[in-house]
Image 1 (cartoon, one colour):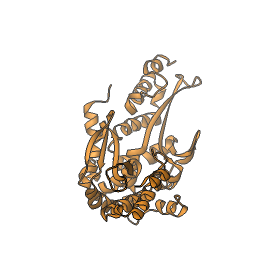
Image 2 (cartoon, chains in turn cyan, blue):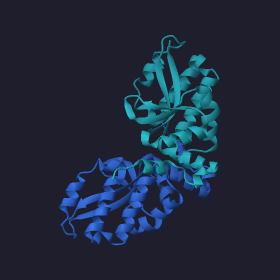
Image 3 (cartoon, chains in turn green, brown):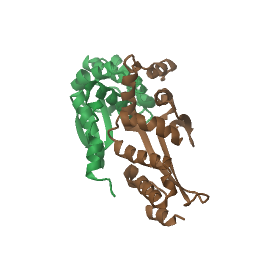
Image 4 (cartoon, chains in turn brown, green):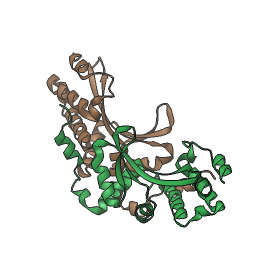
Length: 172
Length: 172
C-alpha cells in the first residue's frame, strides 16, 4: 500500500491543540530553530557605491509533501512567499527577502519568541537588517562592520564564495 | 571576532517564555517535526524465530554546539540518551531505542502533541512498537504485516538495504 492521499491529508491537518495560535507559534519557533535559516549573502555589484551589496534572507526549506507547514508558517508570519527550490522540483522554500517585511514582521516575531539554537545568528541578522534600514551601508566604516557581522554568521561563513579580506579590500 | 563562549551560552539559554513547560512542549513538537526521525530498521538475525528482527528507534540529530536543545528534549521526554554520531564527532544524536520507553514515554507524548509533517510516519511507528509489545512478531502472518508497515515509512523505505520481497521471502 502506497502512502495515499488520505494519509497525506491527515498528516497535514493541524491538531486541535495547534489550532490555538499561541501554541502554533511555539511549534513554529521549534520548527524554525531546527530547519530555518537566517543568512546574509554578499554580492559583487559594480553599480553600487562600494561595489558590494548585503542581501538578508530568511528561509525554511521542506519537501513539497510538507507544503502545508510552510503555509502555516507564512500565515503566522504574515509575509513572504513559497517557491520551488531552483533545480530541485521536490523541494519548496518559504522565503522572506523584502527588507521591510524582515524588519516589521520577521524580526519582531523572533524577538518575542526567542530561538534557542539560532538566536546568535538571528541577533547578527537583526543587526544587519536594522543597519541597512538605517543606511549604515552608505558609510564605508559602518558598511565594513555590517560585512564583518555577516561573516560571523552560520559557522563563520565557511560556505561563502568570497573571503572576508577579499570583500573588505575590494570596497571601492 | 569568533563566535565566543558567551554567545554560545546565551544562545543555549531558554527564553522566559520557553521556561513554561507547556510552551516548551510545542517548541519540541516543532523541532521534532522538522528534525526528528521515527524509523524501524530491519535486521537479519539468524538466531530469531523467523530470521529477521524489527528495531524501532526515535532520534533527533544536531550539531554538538546545540547539545542543550537535545538535553531539553531528553528532559521533557524523560527517557533516552545523547551520544556522538558514529564517525561524526561534531554531531550528536538524542535517541530512544528501548521499547518500553518508546511505548510509555515517546508514543504518549506524540499522541497528545500531534506532529504535522511526521504524523503519518509516527502512526506507523506506533503500530509497530505496539505490535511488538503485543508479541505479534511471534505469528508469521502478523509479523509480515509489521514488516510491510515498516516499509511504508520514510518515503517507502527507499533508503533500505533489503527489498520488501527479499525480507518476506527470507522468513524462515
